[in-house]
Length: 154
Image 1 (tube, rainbow, N blue to C red):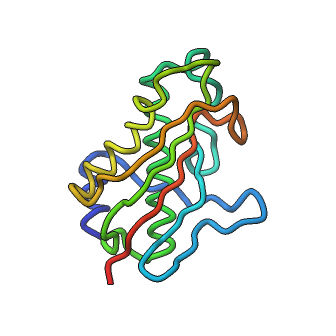
Image 2: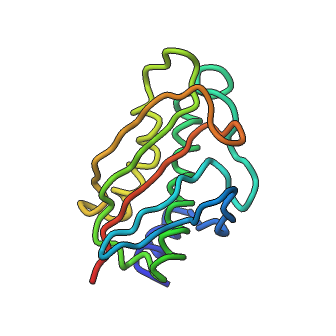
Image 3: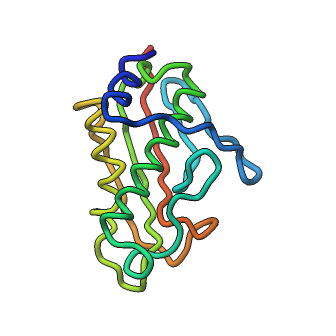
């Protein structure tokens, strides 16, 4: 078990089974020392965990949990791509999308659910540039979707 997976276990968290792509794309691409991951939604082992809009069906806190689930899906895909989470040199960028009611102003607070987990697991290497935006809808009516770019250790 990798050091990062040991940290996950100490937090009471496990990685989900990798989800099959839901369209004409791949879950990741590696270019040089950069890993670009496709967007992942708030599902765990094939079951939607959070659906609906923040400000309607969800609070900021429940939506933060949805973002954390997304981060776990990202970690699964990193492991799939690299063989080990210990090969992550840095989380470079997180693009966060929050399915929110019109004019929902707190997308950054929601996406912190993913960002905070990355920092907790990777320390300074988990700090990243980020966008957090509210959108009118996401695939499968997911509450959150994130896309991540990672620097790979040589």
